[in-house]
Amino acid sequence: MKKGLLMFLIVVIVSTLLVGCSTGKQNEDNSFANNFEKTQKIEIISSDDSDIITTISDNKDIENFVDALIMDDWDWEPVDLPSEAITGKTFKIYRKDAAKISWSKKQKDNLNEVATMTTYKNVPYIKLSLKNFSFNFKVPEEVHEYLNSIEM
Image (cartoon, rainbow, N blue to C red; front, side, top):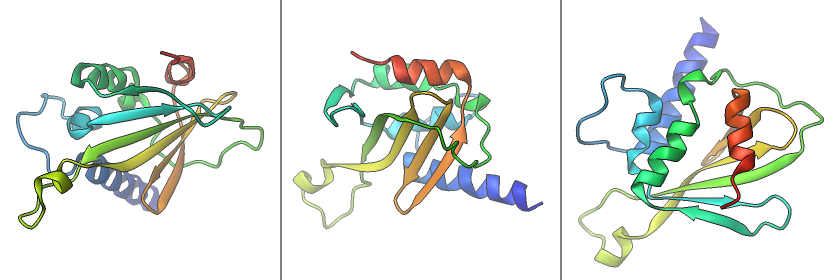
């Protein structure tokens, strides 16, 4: 019962922070990955020198990135990170804040970092950080390989 409740809370928190108020027609399967539609930019940062490797900002490229994550196949139960894990790339996820009446045009066009996803070079795990929360998850091997192969 506690595991189920914890899993539910994690998915709700992640969905809320990454998606915000979603509008428009959703795909029929309504998966978590489809809720990335509000993402405006993803920066991919090297673990070696902390330089930005590439930035994904085109809507189609973001959609392709999210599809490659195969999030429906993730084991969404938080796990302890293996001690031999070596930090890999970091993915910073940005989106615009919801507009507020008092904001000027310049303020509402700013992108804000809403999540950070860190990969590990030698183990198929990711660390997902949202505001003051961080969780480690085991991911499918093909997702691990994809995330660590991005060089653009």
